Image (cartoon, rainbow, N blue to C red; front, side, top):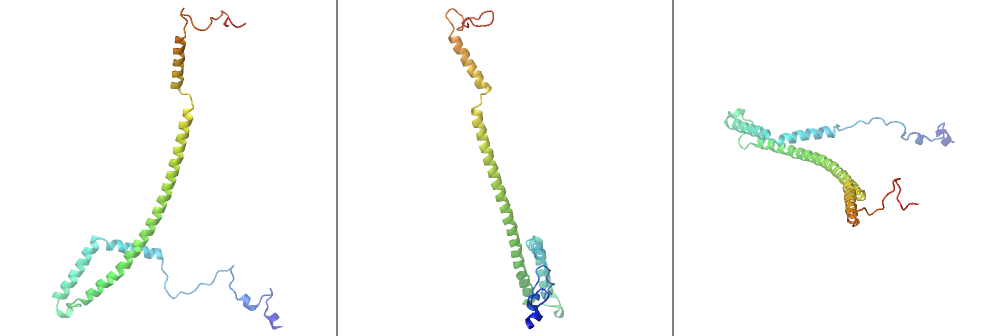
Length: 192
């Protein structure tokens, strides 16, 4: 009896009604960690890595270090923020290096992915070019074969010249043509 009370109008139990419906979107979940766009982060890392690989970065880094050292050596004692062993400078350079290395690796990975896609596209284009070249080679070979069977003007001319020479060599000793004379009506004398 209690099982019948728990059933809804469609005959489903209460536990079946609490299931997630696939025909409706799920409610938005709250996230504890912030979200970021991986592409935007990748583009930023490429810009930073590109800047770290320039002479301008080396010049600016050198200027900052020289100013840092000069200030902490020549300034009055109360104004010095990093005295002689320059521990804070070492910490800053280590921090900069610890961030620069992964950013450079991330930029290299993105470049490798782009290169891989470009190489795949180049490979496919080369395969298409090879297939087109092979097709055209077969077509040219078929045309050459077909032209070998066609009577060309030069071939016909040479055959006619051979026939004329052959006819010249067959003339009768009396100078007449080797063929019987035609009647005035246009028919041969042998025709009856």
